[in-house]
Length: 592
Image (cartoon, rainbow, N blue to C red; front, side, top):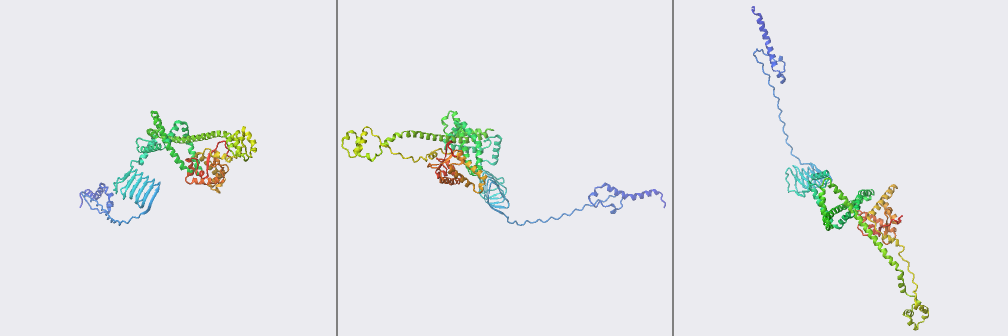
């Protein structure tokens, strides 16, 4: 059949052929994100059968994603029954100058720390003691004692016994129950932050006392009480030191200035001698006591000055009152910035100079008094020696006459007078007549018998040495230091220490010099000499005994040498055993 409209049918066929492709292209352009969500949509359109659709057909929706399978929860493992903890036993722990930590796996019977902190994380069955440190409990403790420290309790802390603190506090922020109430003694004492605040104020303002920190005032009050005790017990000594600064201010201040280089030099000499190291503790104690005593003397000087300026000079002799007044004045001055710390240092050093100057002045007066007594004794002996020739006549007249003239009648006639010469005499009268005749005029005394020579003439120089002034401890110590340095230098250079130890070498040195010249090289420098009390020279036995006992004097911390400080004759132990004294000879006396 012949188509009347061929072009119409051709156009319809072309439309039917292109309609599916256009619909697919429209779906791809409108939903571009569906291809990114799942891999199933990214499949090629040619792989899926496309049903013929009409222009009005709607494309099928994309398939929904399949949810991933959720894994089953793993079974929870039940905790195994806890076994007994394994402890590391440390026993009894004692530490000096360091901290102590008991770890969580450690156990101790007792813990004691001197000068350190204690930290308990594990278990302490007995007591925990800290001297000068803090205690922190995070575990178990039997009892806690802290002196000069605080106690801190953690959330797991257990304290089975008592809690006692001296100068500290209990820090319990977690309300840990305690078996008993804590005992806190002197809790007003400073804690470490207070000390740090006082130190900062002292360094910043250069003053000793601060109005904002309370505990230095307690320490100052204790010091004042001690000064008052010294003033009450040693009233004369405190007043003497105060008078030394009043009467001789130049000498006292010069002595204080001289101590600045002399004390370090003297300490260095003691250290260099090695043996002198044993004297350092005694020197430190002596200087400390002298400084404290001098501080009390300075306070007394200030109090005396204020009393006299106020018109109450009659009360200046009461040492405790003057010390109290001076303490009040110094308390005010110690609070002045830039002046308090300087005054504290100056008064301490001036007080030490006052004590030393007073001691030297006392020794000088004792020497002057001894010299005056000796001069008076020599002056009193001169008139007696001048009267000795005139006193010979009575002694000679009372002497027995010779046998030829000793008959009673002759003596009676010679003494009675001329009226008795008319009586007859005995046969001895003619022999006595020549002597009796001149007796009427003048009877010459018979010749005096010769006097025996004095027995003590050879020992006179030695006796004079024993009466010389005694050597002081300071001079003897200086001479000893020279001898120690000399022997040590010679022994080190000559390698004598390889054969003899130093004590034996030094003993041989002093024995030889005491036997030879009665002194050593150090004694020659300071004009010292060893003299026997009986006036005889020093022999080998005396030198040996003195040398051996000198070593015994060193054993009790040098007490045998220090004995001369309070002995009347300035004798040490070896002086007393050997019967000797150390004297100061005149400078013109040769010792070599």
